[in-house]
Length: 208
Image (tube, rainbow, N blue to C red; front, side):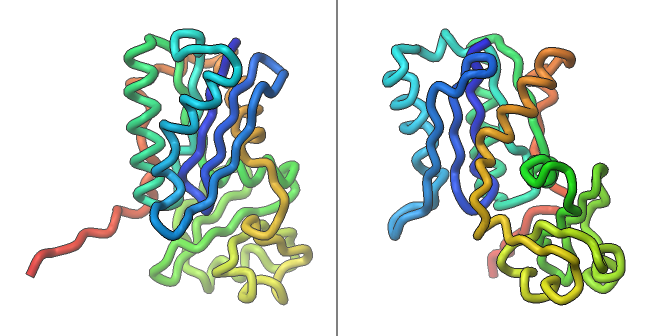
């Protein structure tokens, strides 16, 4: 199976093209001074396909990170995946960023990411949702934690081993594609069901 996996929800864009267990291409994009990293998603997908002598019609499955994360990134990921999957009539699977980070840590860590509003997105094999930070402190105490730069200082004296995914050398694109290969083989993965994971509602700007 030719699988295209991409993630624009976190601090970088991860794009992986693989055939079954073989990684054909892997690309990591960072934001520059002009554009957020997700702005380069479609052009990079096109480039990777061309480098591997493939066309969109060769893709048999799509996998994305559906959040939580950047609201702009979640929308970009989901929209591109749904349009491609519908046009190509192929399977599409969405995986939570919390599950991706947990797998990257070999399922040994509780994942706690900044959710703003004095909350954290919490994951420990199941989705806890957005939890008040004071409660999170109690849950993660003396445990191994994967977090982000915003909460690293808060947790470094609470947890046993604390890692910021933004500083770690995790190959999150490959991890996403690993989970997707497993799911697509056993689940329906209908693109109609591919929806953003908004644990908290997107921010709304009210015009004055």
